[in-house]
Image (cartoon, rainbow, N blue to C red; front, side):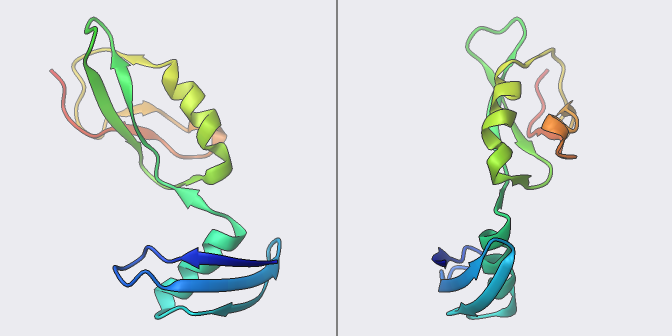
Length: 118
């Protein structure tokens, strides 16, 4: 199976063609640097994403706290993680980088606050 992947590692945005099946990569063409080769290979075999979103804050009706994953999450786990995050309601005060959901969905990734909230 051939797949075109647009590299996002740098502003060049190389169009990389990856040919392979599952975890087996046969060829990678069109990358402009070693980081592009690594990105396209990883995106083909096991895509990951940093998850950024917001959570509810207890006692505050319309204020939300921005959060993000501290490491990239497997792309196929994003919706499961969002279901967990949707059920969260944090208590103030919260400090930037406080862990709000540890090892979310068994991924080994934590959801952390991205700002202080008194």
